[in-house]
Image 1 (tube, each protein chain N blue to C red):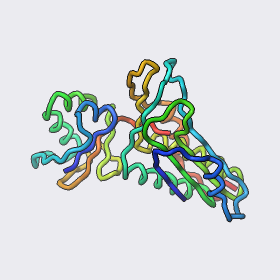
Image 2: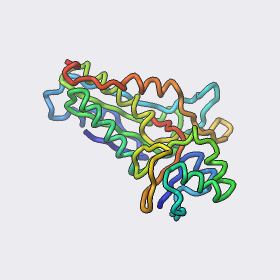
Image 3: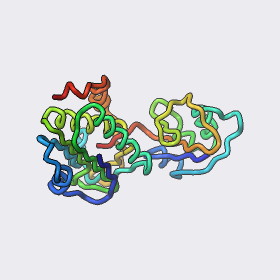
Length: 83
Length: 159
């Protein structure tokens, strides 16, 4: 599974993307975020406040209860500020 | 229907001309150009860096543009959005819509910039005049502006 981080989430994790192999118990975006938090203090900080995080699965907006599986591209980022 | 995401600047006059070229069914063209402001929430802005999600950005812009075309009878449309480091006065975004009549062009243009701000994966990092970095926070007023367009309009309502 590929995970991408943008804006201040990227600054906290220190990387913009990575390949991860979460355990089978990780079935949703919320599970994944919970699991990623354990990867280090930067992750814990980036993923601390779920209300300020938006998610895309395979480049489509998704919610925390969306299913994720091997081979998916999951992006985590703050609310968007384009335009 | 065209969408471009690029680091380079664009020439609004040329872009508008290209949108309308050789289509004499067009009777009205609307455009919006977003620029980097030198001030944000009372603090001076020295520069700004726009980050985006390559792939998804183009996809979302194309989806938003397709939605505008479903709602209004457009002859042509264009969205150009820049990324990278920009300075006050620099152009960030261009939206051009063309239709037989002004109402569809004006409304679709307004819709596109409102939706783009909350639905396209871009993030702005501002440098204050002192060189400090600050991520721009999403505004509730931008969400409200996007929400105004939630109810789909019928194409024939735009005549």
